[in-house]
Structures are given as structure tokens and as C-alpha cells.
Length: 291
Image 1 (cartoon, helix red, strand yellow):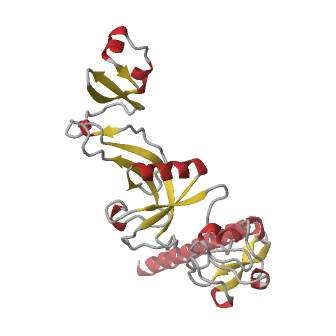
Image 2 (cartoon, one colour):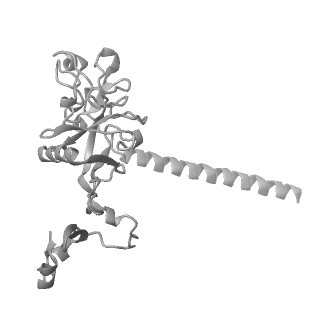
Image 3 (tube, rainbow, N blue to C red):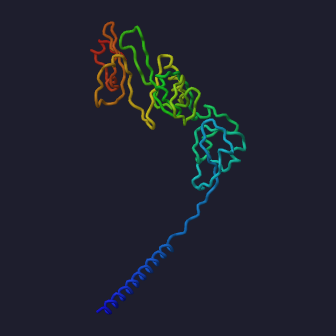
């Protein structure tokens, strides 16, 4: 009995080893076949472009120490990139106009032309103008408005000595880009600073509106949430609106201000523009309703 048991164990071990060998051979053959079917990697054509070897801030002069050349896929080279440091610096010194991160490609749109200075005029979008408004620690959102932010501009007119309701607040412009605060135009600035002037990028007509509004009353900046580019419906707010409860779920439509004259007394009302567009009734005309 002992000899037969030993023989059975030996036979089982032999067949087990043979099964493992056959399975391993089959797996190796399958793996080899898969490798044979994998296409050879396609060689990607590259070309050298110039990138920043360290972070570059607004107004920094480009030089050999802050630049380096790296290979870049030829079909993904960004517009305005430079192929060599020598070509970049050959025509004269160049200054940084917009902050550039380490290993970021140097683009013509982010630096000055040969021999040009890093001035605010070089940062302006084509067709736009730079207009400066005077602010204080309150009007300037306590110094939290920084270059690159976007703001709305309010005009407040306080007519002291007049009857109640003549003081008002209007939205002059929305979604205006901040170019600089005082004389700082670094768009990577991240520390609040109380300043006396904020320079804005606007179109010609909007610049005229700001200039006129500044002569009529006090301008206040309202900081917009980053990425919020949607214009919101706005209306004139008067002293009579103060203290009135805000209706929940009220429709956001366009509003107009009408003046109702009853005898010698004049009162301003903000109403939906659709209501103003309706023909005036005879009773309203007798009451002296004017727009």
C-alpha cells in the first residue's frame, strides 16, 4: 500500500508539472503574438521653441538666463512662438507684458517688440482705450481690485438740499477689465493694495461715459466674480427705494424711471420697461406723467 501511494503521488506531481509547463508555454506564445501585432510607434516630428526657464513677471527684460530651448511637437507649436533664443533677442531687448510661468512658451503676444518698453499702451487690446478713475479705500473695494480683474462701475448722485427721491445710483458700465492700479500693471499681483487710481480698458464711447459720469457724481467699483462675463439687468435706484423689501423671485427685466408730477410735487418711480412702452391714458396725462 505504501509503494502504490508513493507511485500515485509521483505521477500526480509529474502531470502537474507538465500542466504548468504547457500553460506557461501557451501564455508566452499568446503574449508574443500580441507583441507582434502592436504597431511600431510613429516618430513624432519636433522642432525647438523657446520657453521660460523661470517665472517671468510684467516688466522683466528677457535674457539668456531666463530662457531655454526645448523640443516641441511640430504640429502643436503655438502661434507666435520663437524657434531659438538667438532669433528672439537678435533685434533688440524685449520686455515681458504678461506674466509667463516656468516652461511656458514665449509668445510674441506676451512680450514687447524689439527695443520697445513695457508700457501700458503695449498691453491694450487693439481698438481699446485706457481710462483712469479716481478711487479711495471704499470705492476701490478696499484694495481687492487687482490688474486683470473685471468690475462694474456705479454712479451715485447726491443732490443735497433737494427733495427726497432726487438722489440716485446708476450702473454706468459692466464687465470692464482692470489694466492697472496706481502704476502697477502686473497681472500676477495677488496682494490687496489700497490705491488712489484704477486704470480701465474700455471702448471710445465707454470712456466718454466714464468721463461724463465722473463729473456728475461719485464713481464706485463693484468687483465681479472671476469668470463671470454675463451682463445683468440693472435699473436706477433712488432714495425712495431704500428700506423697501426686495420681492423674492421677482423677474429681472429692464426698468425705466418715470416722473409723476402732482401739482408742485414730483416723484420718481422705477417700472418695467414694458409698462412704460404702453400708451399713456388720459388720466395719466392729466396727472402730469413724464418720462
